[in-house]
Image (cartoon, rainbow, N blue to C red; front, top):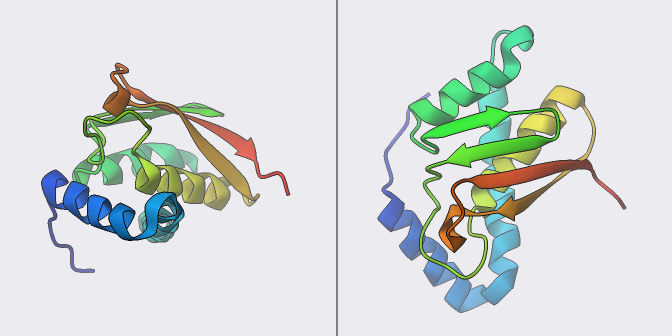
Length: 134
């Protein structure tokens, strides 16, 4: 597989452009983008016993995050590439990646919510995993 690099500034400008056209509905698009990325990350994971360790390594190697820790239902991230100064949570792509990873591991529909975000001044982004409620 071939990879390219995109800067955090480019991501922020792309997201700002989509938000100017689509408003808040763009967040769903970013989330869906993250789910696709997450599904591809799953294909790279070779050891199910080390699933989240490998996912963490891949996310850091791709510079999507600086650090990430996976707990059963809580994920803590520092240095998400999506972090910027904002009054709202900004890590929708990462939220989609995390949802895809947990769905791939647990084979259940998963909902991932960003509870805290560095963009709003928190010391880390924190995500909560819930089984998707229909």
